[in-house]
Length: 417
Image (cartoon, rainbow, N blue to C red):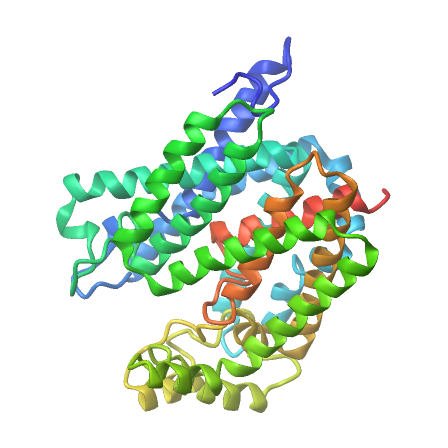
Protein backbone atom coordinates (compact mmCIF):
# COMPACT_ATOMS: atom_id res chain seq x y z
CA UNK A 1 0.00 0.00 0.00
CA UNK A 2 1.40 3.39 -0.94
CA UNK A 3 2.34 5.73 1.87
CA UNK A 4 0.00 8.52 0.76
CA UNK A 5 -3.09 6.36 0.17
CA UNK A 6 -4.75 8.01 3.15
CA UNK A 7 -3.24 11.39 2.51
CA UNK A 8 -0.84 11.56 5.44
CA UNK A 9 0.55 15.10 5.64
CA UNK A 10 4.26 15.73 6.06
CA UNK A 11 6.22 17.28 8.91
CA UNK A 12 4.98 17.66 12.49
CA UNK A 13 1.43 16.72 11.48
CA UNK A 14 2.36 13.08 10.75
CA UNK A 15 2.07 11.85 14.33
CA UNK A 16 -1.42 13.34 14.85
CA UNK A 17 -2.64 12.19 11.43
CA UNK A 18 -1.37 8.66 11.97
CA UNK A 19 -3.05 8.51 15.37
CA UNK A 20 -6.24 9.88 13.85
CA UNK A 21 -6.30 7.27 11.07
CA UNK A 22 -5.62 4.36 13.43
CA UNK A 23 -8.26 5.56 15.90
CA UNK A 24 -10.88 5.96 13.17
CA UNK A 25 -10.08 2.52 11.73
CA UNK A 26 -10.48 0.89 15.15
CA UNK A 27 -13.70 2.79 15.82
CA UNK A 28 -15.11 1.67 12.47
CA UNK A 29 -14.05 -1.91 13.11
CA UNK A 30 -16.01 -1.89 16.36
CA UNK A 31 -19.04 -0.59 14.47
CA UNK A 32 -19.04 -3.74 12.33
CA UNK A 33 -19.86 -5.87 15.37
CA UNK A 34 -17.35 -8.40 14.08
CA UNK A 35 -16.70 -9.86 17.55
CA UNK A 36 -20.35 -10.39 18.45
CA UNK A 37 -20.22 -14.10 17.52
CA UNK A 38 -17.88 -14.64 20.48
CA UNK A 39 -20.58 -13.31 22.83
CA UNK A 40 -23.45 -15.51 21.66
CA UNK A 41 -25.25 -17.42 24.40
CA UNK A 42 -26.36 -21.05 24.24
CA UNK A 43 -29.68 -20.14 22.59
CA UNK A 44 -27.84 -18.34 19.78
CA UNK A 45 -28.86 -14.87 20.94
CA UNK A 46 -27.24 -11.92 22.64
CA UNK A 47 -28.27 -11.49 26.28
CA UNK A 48 -28.17 -8.34 28.37
CA UNK A 49 -24.61 -9.02 29.53
CA UNK A 50 -23.10 -9.37 26.05
CA UNK A 51 -25.06 -6.36 24.85
CA UNK A 52 -23.54 -4.29 27.66
CA UNK A 53 -20.09 -5.46 26.58
CA UNK A 54 -20.77 -4.39 22.98
CA UNK A 55 -22.02 -0.98 24.16
CA UNK A 56 -18.91 -0.55 26.32
CA UNK A 57 -16.68 -1.42 23.35
CA UNK A 58 -18.23 1.44 21.39
CA UNK A 59 -17.32 4.05 24.02
CA UNK A 60 -13.69 4.61 22.88
CA UNK A 61 -15.00 5.29 19.38
CA UNK A 62 -17.38 7.88 20.77
CA UNK A 63 -14.49 9.54 22.59
CA UNK A 64 -12.40 9.62 19.41
CA UNK A 65 -15.31 11.21 17.57
CA UNK A 66 -15.68 13.98 20.15
CA UNK A 67 -11.96 14.74 20.21
CA UNK A 68 -11.70 15.03 16.42
CA UNK A 69 -14.85 17.12 16.04
CA UNK A 70 -13.72 19.44 18.85
CA UNK A 71 -10.42 19.94 17.04
CA UNK A 72 -12.13 20.60 13.69
CA UNK A 73 -15.33 22.24 14.86
CA UNK A 74 -15.38 24.90 12.10
CA UNK A 75 -15.81 22.45 9.17
CA UNK A 76 -18.14 20.40 11.37
CA UNK A 77 -20.46 23.37 11.92
CA UNK A 78 -20.25 24.21 8.23
CA UNK A 79 -21.30 20.68 7.26
CA UNK A 80 -24.21 20.81 9.71
CA UNK A 81 -25.48 23.84 7.80
CA UNK A 82 -24.82 22.24 4.42
CA UNK A 83 -27.14 19.32 5.18
CA UNK A 84 -29.72 20.43 7.74
CA UNK A 85 -32.08 17.46 7.18
CA UNK A 86 -29.29 15.06 8.16
CA UNK A 87 -28.38 17.23 11.14
CA UNK A 88 -31.97 16.98 12.40
CA UNK A 89 -31.50 13.24 12.85
CA UNK A 90 -29.01 14.09 15.60
CA UNK A 91 -31.93 15.59 17.53
CA UNK A 92 -35.14 13.81 16.48
CA UNK A 93 -34.42 10.48 18.24
CA UNK A 94 -33.95 12.36 21.54
CA UNK A 95 -37.18 14.32 21.01
CA UNK A 96 -39.05 11.08 20.37
CA UNK A 97 -38.43 10.10 24.01
CA UNK A 98 -41.27 12.48 24.93
CA UNK A 99 -43.82 10.24 23.16
CA UNK A 100 -41.93 6.94 23.30
CA UNK A 101 -43.56 3.81 24.71
CA UNK A 102 -40.15 3.03 26.24
CA UNK A 103 -38.43 6.34 27.09
CA UNK A 104 -35.36 4.76 28.71
CA UNK A 105 -34.79 2.48 25.70
CA UNK A 106 -35.23 5.41 23.32
CA UNK A 107 -32.79 7.64 25.22
CA UNK A 108 -30.12 4.95 25.42
CA UNK A 109 -30.36 4.15 21.73
CA UNK A 110 -30.66 7.82 20.78
CA UNK A 111 -27.23 8.37 22.33
CA UNK A 112 -25.84 5.53 20.21
CA UNK A 113 -27.31 6.83 16.92
CA UNK A 114 -26.14 10.34 17.85
CA UNK A 115 -22.52 9.20 18.04
CA UNK A 116 -22.87 6.93 15.02
CA UNK A 117 -23.94 9.90 12.90
CA UNK A 118 -21.25 12.11 14.44
CA UNK A 119 -18.68 9.55 13.33
CA UNK A 120 -19.94 10.06 9.78
CA UNK A 121 -19.21 13.77 10.12
CA UNK A 122 -15.65 12.90 11.16
CA UNK A 123 -15.22 10.76 8.06
CA UNK A 124 -16.73 13.36 5.74
CA UNK A 125 -14.60 16.18 7.19
CA UNK A 126 -11.23 14.47 7.67
CA UNK A 127 -11.09 12.20 4.60
CA UNK A 128 -11.51 12.70 0.89
CA UNK A 129 -13.82 10.34 -1.06
CA UNK A 130 -10.79 8.38 -2.28
CA UNK A 131 -9.37 8.08 1.25
CA UNK A 132 -12.81 7.00 2.51
CA UNK A 133 -12.81 4.27 -0.14
CA UNK A 134 -9.48 2.99 1.17
CA UNK A 135 -10.62 3.11 4.80
CA UNK A 136 -13.89 1.31 4.10
CA UNK A 137 -12.16 -1.40 2.10
CA UNK A 138 -9.61 -1.93 4.88
CA UNK A 139 -12.37 -2.38 7.48
CA UNK A 140 -14.38 -4.80 5.35
CA UNK A 141 -11.22 -6.69 4.39
CA UNK A 142 -10.44 -7.21 8.08
CA UNK A 143 -13.90 -8.68 8.76
CA UNK A 144 -13.65 -11.00 5.76
CA UNK A 145 -10.16 -12.24 6.65
CA UNK A 146 -11.20 -12.82 10.27
CA UNK A 147 -14.26 -14.73 9.04
CA UNK A 148 -12.11 -17.02 6.90
CA UNK A 149 -9.65 -17.55 9.76
CA UNK A 150 -12.58 -18.44 12.02
CA UNK A 151 -13.21 -21.53 9.87
CA UNK A 152 -9.98 -22.99 11.27
CA UNK A 153 -9.75 -21.25 14.65
CA UNK A 154 -13.44 -21.34 15.69
CA UNK A 155 -15.22 -23.97 13.57
CA UNK A 156 -17.96 -24.37 16.17
CA UNK A 157 -18.89 -20.70 15.93
CA UNK A 158 -17.98 -19.86 12.34
CA UNK A 159 -20.94 -21.72 10.83
CA UNK A 160 -24.68 -21.40 11.36
CA UNK A 161 -25.95 -23.78 14.09
CA UNK A 162 -28.37 -25.67 11.83
CA UNK A 163 -26.42 -25.78 8.58
CA UNK A 164 -23.15 -25.48 6.68
CA UNK A 165 -23.54 -21.76 5.91
CA UNK A 166 -20.60 -19.62 6.97
CA UNK A 167 -21.29 -16.67 9.27
CA UNK A 168 -17.67 -16.01 10.19
CA UNK A 169 -17.29 -13.45 12.97
CA UNK A 170 -20.89 -12.24 12.63
CA UNK A 171 -24.09 -13.46 14.28
CA UNK A 172 -25.75 -14.50 11.01
CA UNK A 173 -24.77 -15.64 7.52
CA UNK A 174 -26.69 -12.74 5.93
CA UNK A 175 -24.52 -10.18 7.71
CA UNK A 176 -21.34 -11.82 6.43
CA UNK A 177 -22.96 -11.96 3.00
CA UNK A 178 -23.72 -8.22 3.06
CA UNK A 179 -20.14 -7.38 3.99
CA UNK A 180 -18.88 -9.68 1.26
CA UNK A 181 -21.16 -8.02 -1.30
CA UNK A 182 -19.99 -4.55 -0.29
CA UNK A 183 -16.43 -5.86 -0.24
CA UNK A 184 -16.79 -6.89 -3.88
CA UNK A 185 -18.06 -3.41 -4.77
CA UNK A 186 -15.42 -1.45 -2.87
CA UNK A 187 -12.46 -3.64 -3.83
CA UNK A 188 -13.46 -3.50 -7.50
CA UNK A 189 -13.57 0.30 -7.30
CA UNK A 190 -10.24 0.37 -5.47
CA UNK A 191 -8.61 -1.83 -8.08
CA UNK A 192 -9.96 0.31 -10.90
CA UNK A 193 -8.48 3.48 -9.36
CA UNK A 194 -5.01 3.75 -10.87
CA UNK A 195 -3.99 6.77 -8.76
CA UNK A 196 -3.61 4.71 -5.58
CA UNK A 197 -1.49 1.79 -6.76
CA UNK A 198 -3.45 -0.66 -4.61
CA UNK A 199 -4.49 -3.18 -7.26
CA UNK A 200 -2.80 -6.26 -5.65
CA UNK A 201 -4.48 -5.46 -2.32
CA UNK A 202 -7.82 -4.84 -4.07
CA UNK A 203 -7.62 -8.17 -5.92
CA UNK A 204 -6.90 -9.99 -2.65
CA UNK A 205 -9.93 -8.39 -0.98
CA UNK A 206 -12.10 -9.17 -4.01
CA UNK A 207 -11.16 -12.86 -3.86
CA UNK A 208 -11.79 -13.02 -0.09
CA UNK A 209 -15.15 -11.29 -0.56
CA UNK A 210 -16.17 -13.71 -3.31
CA UNK A 211 -15.24 -16.73 -1.19
CA UNK A 212 -17.18 -15.39 1.82
CA UNK A 213 -20.18 -14.57 -0.36
CA UNK A 214 -20.33 -18.11 -1.74
CA UNK A 215 -19.68 -19.82 1.61
CA UNK A 216 -22.37 -17.75 3.35
CA UNK A 217 -24.98 -19.12 0.91
CA UNK A 218 -26.98 -15.96 1.59
CA UNK A 219 -29.69 -15.26 -0.97
CA UNK A 220 -30.08 -11.65 0.13
CA UNK A 221 -26.34 -11.11 -0.21
CA UNK A 222 -26.36 -12.49 -3.75
CA UNK A 223 -29.19 -10.08 -4.58
CA UNK A 224 -27.13 -7.27 -3.02
CA UNK A 225 -24.14 -8.16 -5.20
CA UNK A 226 -26.36 -8.27 -8.28
CA UNK A 227 -27.79 -4.87 -7.37
CA UNK A 228 -24.26 -3.48 -7.09
CA UNK A 229 -23.49 -4.65 -10.62
CA UNK A 230 -26.77 -3.25 -11.99
CA UNK A 231 -26.32 0.14 -10.33
CA UNK A 232 -22.69 0.32 -11.44
CA UNK A 233 -23.82 -0.08 -15.04
CA UNK A 234 -26.57 2.50 -14.52
CA UNK A 235 -24.30 5.15 -13.00
CA UNK A 236 -21.57 4.50 -15.58
CA UNK A 237 -24.12 5.16 -18.33
CA UNK A 238 -25.47 8.16 -16.43
CA UNK A 239 -22.01 9.70 -16.20
CA UNK A 240 -21.56 9.55 -19.97
CA UNK A 241 -25.13 10.41 -20.98
CA UNK A 242 -26.28 13.76 -22.29
CA UNK A 243 -28.96 15.67 -20.33
CA UNK A 244 -31.89 14.07 -22.20
CA UNK A 245 -30.46 10.58 -21.87
CA UNK A 246 -29.68 11.21 -18.20
CA UNK A 247 -33.31 12.14 -17.54
CA UNK A 248 -34.53 9.02 -19.36
CA UNK A 249 -32.22 6.70 -17.39
CA UNK A 250 -33.20 8.31 -14.10
CA UNK A 251 -36.92 7.95 -14.80
CA UNK A 252 -36.42 4.33 -15.88
CA UNK A 253 -34.65 3.41 -12.64
CA UNK A 254 -37.16 5.31 -10.49
CA UNK A 255 -40.06 3.52 -12.14
CA UNK A 256 -38.33 0.15 -11.75
CA UNK A 257 -37.66 0.83 -8.07
CA UNK A 258 -41.26 1.90 -7.41
CA UNK A 259 -42.51 -1.20 -9.24
CA UNK A 260 -40.25 -3.44 -7.17
CA UNK A 261 -41.35 -1.78 -3.92
CA UNK A 262 -45.01 -2.16 -4.86
CA UNK A 263 -44.60 -5.82 -5.84
CA UNK A 264 -42.70 -7.02 -2.77
CA UNK A 265 -45.94 -7.83 -0.93
CA UNK A 266 -47.89 -9.20 -3.90
CA UNK A 267 -46.15 -10.19 -7.14
CA UNK A 268 -42.84 -11.37 -5.65
CA UNK A 269 -44.43 -13.92 -3.24
CA UNK A 270 -46.54 -15.32 -6.10
CA UNK A 271 -43.44 -15.59 -8.28
CA UNK A 272 -41.48 -17.33 -5.54
CA UNK A 273 -44.33 -19.76 -4.90
CA UNK A 274 -44.36 -20.66 -8.60
CA UNK A 275 -40.62 -21.35 -8.38
CA UNK A 276 -41.08 -23.58 -5.34
CA UNK A 277 -39.45 -21.05 -2.99
CA UNK A 278 -40.70 -19.60 0.29
CA UNK A 279 -43.54 -17.28 -0.80
CA UNK A 280 -43.45 -15.42 2.53
CA UNK A 281 -39.89 -14.15 1.94
CA UNK A 282 -38.77 -16.10 5.03
CA UNK A 283 -41.72 -14.85 7.05
CA UNK A 284 -41.42 -11.22 6.02
CA UNK A 285 -44.82 -10.88 4.30
CA UNK A 286 -46.97 -11.84 7.34
CA UNK A 287 -44.64 -9.74 9.50
CA UNK A 288 -45.16 -6.71 7.26
CA UNK A 289 -48.94 -7.12 7.40
CA UNK A 290 -48.88 -6.94 11.20
CA UNK A 291 -46.33 -4.11 11.24
CA UNK A 292 -48.48 -2.05 8.87
CA UNK A 293 -51.41 -2.39 11.26
CA UNK A 294 -49.21 -1.18 14.14
CA UNK A 295 -48.00 1.78 12.06
CA UNK A 296 -51.59 2.86 11.38
CA UNK A 297 -52.28 3.02 15.12
CA UNK A 298 -49.58 5.70 15.62
CA UNK A 299 -48.86 7.07 12.15
CA UNK A 300 -47.64 10.62 12.81
CA UNK A 301 -44.93 10.29 15.46
CA UNK A 302 -44.51 6.55 15.84
CA UNK A 303 -43.66 4.71 19.04
CA UNK A 304 -40.35 6.42 19.84
CA UNK A 305 -36.91 5.74 18.41
CA UNK A 306 -36.09 2.00 18.59
CA UNK A 307 -38.73 1.44 21.30
CA UNK A 308 -41.19 -0.72 19.37
CA UNK A 309 -39.15 -3.94 19.29
CA UNK A 310 -38.09 -3.80 22.95
CA UNK A 311 -39.18 -6.51 25.40
CA UNK A 312 -41.37 -4.01 27.25
CA UNK A 313 -43.43 -3.25 24.14
CA UNK A 314 -46.92 -4.71 24.29
CA UNK A 315 -47.39 -3.99 20.59
CA UNK A 316 -44.33 -6.06 19.72
CA UNK A 317 -45.53 -8.95 21.87
CA UNK A 318 -48.82 -9.01 19.97
CA UNK A 319 -46.87 -9.47 16.73
CA UNK A 320 -44.47 -12.01 18.21
CA UNK A 321 -47.37 -14.07 19.58
CA UNK A 322 -49.16 -14.14 16.24
CA UNK A 323 -46.00 -15.00 14.30
CA UNK A 324 -44.71 -17.48 16.92
CA UNK A 325 -41.20 -16.06 16.51
CA UNK A 326 -39.53 -12.94 17.93
CA UNK A 327 -38.73 -10.72 14.97
CA UNK A 328 -35.92 -8.33 16.03
CA UNK A 329 -37.15 -5.66 13.63
CA UNK A 330 -39.56 -5.14 10.72
CA UNK A 331 -37.13 -6.46 8.08
CA UNK A 332 -37.79 -3.21 6.24
CA UNK A 333 -35.89 -0.03 7.08
CA UNK A 334 -38.67 2.28 5.94
CA UNK A 335 -41.31 0.51 8.03
CA UNK A 336 -39.01 0.61 11.05
CA UNK A 337 -38.56 4.35 10.52
CA UNK A 338 -42.35 4.72 10.62
CA UNK A 339 -42.50 2.63 13.79
CA UNK A 340 -39.79 4.72 15.44
CA UNK A 341 -40.49 8.26 14.23
CA UNK A 342 -43.73 8.10 12.25
CA UNK A 343 -44.49 10.07 9.13
CA UNK A 344 -42.43 12.96 10.52
CA UNK A 345 -39.30 10.82 10.57
CA UNK A 346 -40.04 9.19 7.22
CA UNK A 347 -40.60 12.57 5.54
CA UNK A 348 -37.26 13.81 6.88
CA UNK A 349 -35.58 10.62 5.70
CA UNK A 350 -37.05 11.04 2.21
CA UNK A 351 -35.58 14.55 2.05
CA UNK A 352 -32.16 13.19 3.05
CA UNK A 353 -32.39 10.45 0.42
CA UNK A 354 -33.54 12.73 -2.41
CA UNK A 355 -30.76 15.21 -1.63
CA UNK A 356 -28.16 12.43 -1.60
CA UNK A 357 -29.34 10.97 -4.91
CA UNK A 358 -29.50 14.38 -6.61
CA UNK A 359 -26.18 15.68 -5.29
CA UNK A 360 -24.39 12.39 -5.92
CA UNK A 361 -25.56 12.24 -9.53
CA UNK A 362 -24.50 15.85 -10.11
CA UNK A 363 -20.99 15.20 -8.77
CA UNK A 364 -20.71 12.06 -10.87
CA UNK A 365 -20.89 14.11 -14.06
CA UNK A 366 -19.00 17.15 -12.79
CA UNK A 367 -16.00 15.44 -11.15
CA UNK A 368 -15.43 12.13 -13.00
CA UNK A 369 -11.89 11.83 -11.63
CA UNK A 370 -13.19 11.34 -8.06
CA UNK A 371 -14.70 8.00 -6.96
CA UNK A 372 -18.24 9.36 -6.90
CA UNK A 373 -19.47 6.42 -8.96
CA UNK A 374 -18.83 3.85 -6.23
CA UNK A 375 -20.34 6.13 -3.57
CA UNK A 376 -23.47 6.58 -5.68
CA UNK A 377 -23.72 2.82 -6.14
CA UNK A 378 -23.20 2.29 -2.40
CA UNK A 379 -26.06 4.66 -1.57
CA UNK A 380 -28.42 3.13 -4.14
CA UNK A 381 -27.72 -0.46 -3.07
CA UNK A 382 -28.16 0.42 0.60
CA UNK A 383 -31.53 2.05 -0.07
CA UNK A 384 -32.86 -0.93 -2.03
CA UNK A 385 -31.55 -3.37 0.61
CA UNK A 386 -33.77 -1.66 3.15
CA UNK A 387 -36.87 -2.87 1.34
CA UNK A 388 -36.27 -6.32 2.83
CA UNK A 389 -33.74 -5.56 5.60
CA UNK A 390 -33.65 -2.99 8.40
CA UNK A 391 -30.43 -0.98 8.40
CA UNK A 392 -31.68 2.61 8.14
CA UNK A 393 -31.16 4.67 11.31
CA UNK A 394 -29.52 1.68 13.01
CA UNK A 395 -27.12 2.69 15.75
CA UNK A 396 -23.58 1.26 15.75
CA UNK A 397 -24.02 -0.13 12.24
CA UNK A 398 -21.12 0.12 9.81
CA UNK A 399 -23.24 -0.13 6.66
CA UNK A 400 -25.47 2.73 7.83
CA UNK A 401 -22.31 4.74 8.54
CA UNK A 402 -21.18 4.16 4.95
CA UNK A 403 -24.50 5.50 3.65
CA UNK A 404 -24.56 8.61 5.86
CA UNK A 405 -20.90 9.41 5.17
CA UNK A 406 -21.47 9.22 1.42
CA UNK A 407 -24.49 11.53 1.71
CA UNK A 408 -22.49 14.02 3.79
CA UNK A 409 -19.60 13.95 1.33
CA UNK A 410 -22.04 14.74 -1.48
CA UNK A 411 -23.35 17.73 0.49
CA UNK A 412 -19.89 18.96 1.45
CA UNK A 413 -18.69 19.02 -2.15
CA UNK A 414 -21.97 20.07 -3.79
CA UNK A 415 -23.34 22.72 -1.39
CA UNK A 416 -21.63 26.12 -0.93
CA UNK A 417 -20.53 26.87 2.63
